[in-house]
Image (cartoon, rainbow, N blue to C red; front, side, top):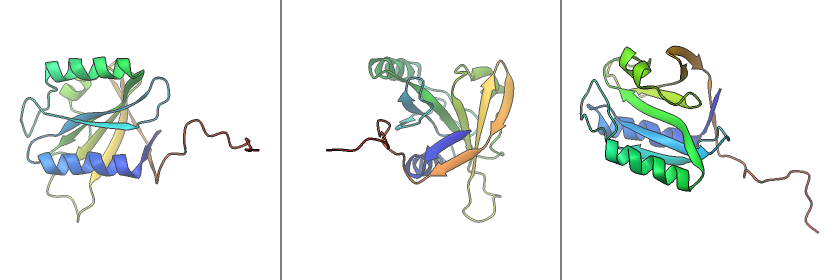
Length: 152
C-alpha cells in the first residue's frame, strides 16, 4: 500500500496537469528503507512527448548522487499518461528498475468525468505489475515522534 501526504499528492497531480499535453515525470524521495515519500522532485521529460517519458540521463545521475548523499532512495517514481488510463504500458514495465519503489501513474486524458484525476500506484517487479491501494493522509507525523515519551 502507498501512503502519501495530501501536499505531495497534489504536487504530482499539478505537475501532470501543467505538463499536459506532454507526459510529466518525477520522483519522490524518502529516507532509505522507510517507504515514506517525503521530497518531491519534478523532472523534465527529456522526450517532450505526449506518449512517452524519459528522464534526462545527466539529471538522473545528479538526482541519484543527491539522494545517496542524503541517505535517500526513490520511494515513488511517477509519470502521467495523457490519452490513456493510468496503467503501466509495456515500455513503463521495461523501464521499471526500482523494485522497492511505488510506480504512480496519473491520467490527464480529457474523457475523464469532471475534474477528478485518475491516480494509481503499482509495484513492478521482474515485469509483474501489481496494483496497490493508495491512502492519502493530511500530513505525516514526525518520524522520530515517540508517543510514549513525556518531557519533564
